[in-house]
Amino acid sequence: MNQTTKPSRRSFLNIGAGAAAAAGLSEVLSPGSLAASSPARAVVCIYLVGGNDSNNLIVPLDSPAYDAYASARGPLAIPRSDLLSVQSGPSARYGFHPNLPGLRDLYNQSTLAVLANVGRRAAPGAIPPEYFLHTSMQVRFVPNGYMAIPWAAPAAVDPGKLRIKRLTHGVTMAAAETVQARGESALRALGSNRDETPFPGDRFGQRLASVFAALRAGSFRQQAFLVPFDGFDTHARQLERQANLFTDLNNGLVAFYGAIRDMGMAQSVTIYTDTEFNRTLRPNSAGGSEHGWGGHQLILGGSTLGGRIYGNFPSMVVGGVEDAAGNGTWFPTTSNTEYAATVAAWYGKYDLLEAPEYANDGGPVTRLDFLTQ
Image (cartoon, rainbow, N blue to C red; front, side):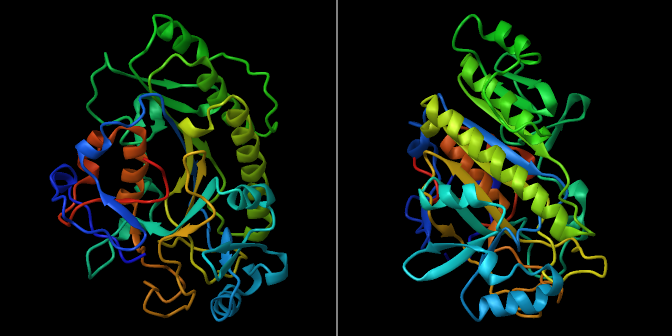
């Protein structure tokens, strides 16, 4: 996919129909083309708190990219033989981290996709230093410090139209107006709802069980969940720590997708990952990695056009033209705004991207093609 254009708050809703999308992009967004979005859809953002090192989430298997990866990663490199091989297109081979077998299987079943090298874009010149701070998290803090998806819970909302609720285990839900009278009582009950569906017993599994309980209640026209998953600030002992984190991520998402599929909701729920930033390809002296920039994200669901890696995967060459800092800090080739815009448009909330944090002086926001209409 060619480099995406920088978004403009105004141009998002005022774009020419003749703007041509590059390969790997479907269409420039407009209200008319999205008005038919389903009113019964839900999104679940899995926020990997701390900055997930996605250089080991998915790795190119073919040379010279794998050789460049292994040389630069040093002790953090995953042996090629341990990576879980998948195809993207007719010839490109990649490998998922060995602790992600269930997600590899969902990828092969075309229900999981990867978006490569996505991040906050910057104009040519100096890189804004705040891009490498945890405080630049792409979330909104709502009252009492809860995190929520920005476009689903904008700063100015009509309290009669949107409800923001913290569920059990720290999950935040932003719900549109109810579709039935029992919606408000169901919302109040969700804080203590005990779900019997088998999910992993770790904290991440418990959080996903809270989301599933809310979805099963079925009292709201739209629901947008933010599920925080802590521990990804891996400055030290990254191999061990990330292996455990990826095991929990794999088991939780496989269980969650199986539960919504068995309930007949797979087509109407999209799960996607987000994080502050990727980490440097080159390790530090403590067996970890430092704050980086562009990284890879996962999108899962029955509406996902999976079994493919979207975007431009970096060549893994430290010091190359894709490296912003000489240590494997990748310039993002797809913007966070276009990533968010694609999910928001599928959900039916493209209008909320008029929020100030999405303002930019660039060109139109283009919808990526990893989700169905």
